[in-house]
Image 1 (tube, rainbow, N blue to C red):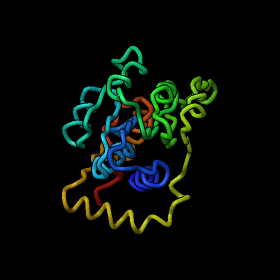
Image 2: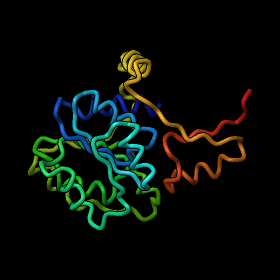
Image 3: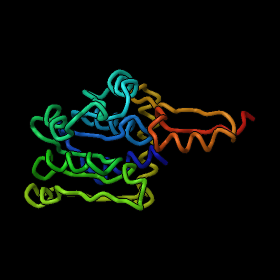
Length: 208
């Protein structure tokens, strides 16, 4: 499902064009890592954000992102995005919401596209945080859309054909964070929200 979410969100919601400037948050996660690689294959310039140096290195050296940064080391996310996108952002694939979405709104180019895939920063729904820079949707004519992969099942055969071909050719790679045994599942779930996983979090219940 995460792979197809990446594919449907990027191609259907983001409507990419060769040469687009693409930003992906939570870029080393199950969805983000494939979005970035698909964007590179499409001829885009791609920057990702993650929460550790290990994940930043992974984005640049394994997944082929042009640049990546640790958002936890940035005092001002708006300044950080302006550093990596002095010309602005055409596509923002949002997996986190919150302050990162707010900063991205300030840096979108005219007629940019934002795919709202996840809101991990809003895991505490009892205290939701508002978004302050929505006027940029009007002034820059930006399209922002939430989506579910289940709305795009007509693309699934093409997804399988494309991704299997890319994988066999070595054009994409995929990283999983494997935990062993059902007893590890609670800690693995909590780790997802703390950013401890590297790649897709998987719990293997048994080897047979």
